[in-house]
Length: 129
Image (cartoon, rainbow, N blue to C red; front, top):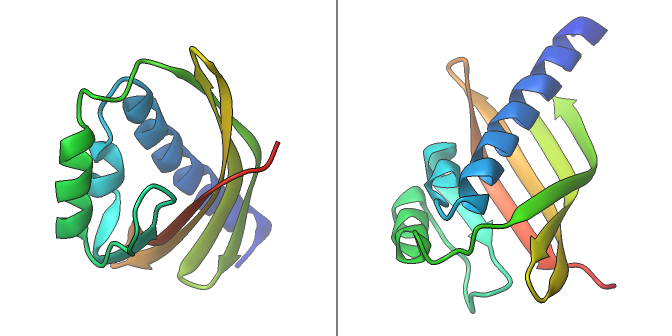
């Protein structure tokens, strides 16, 4: 894969992630569900167990719909590493809340299924600081 193709994958994955983050910041977390593969797995620091598929993720995020306060955010130090049909996105998600900023470490593993990039696994953790 040449540099231009890698750049296209990086731009595609980042655009998908930012669109989902934009929706989240307006109280609609379902963009992440729509971006996810049917067998997605997710580690969320606010849950006591792993999410094991898109149906579970949809149920969890539907409960959050319209309960997330309108907030600004920043994506800090994003990086996409592509390995064949897999793209690993890492970044720090800084959420601007009324009571102060909160930072989350995010890893999203996208895979290309029949020409469509989907989240296969996501891991979110609270960042120190």
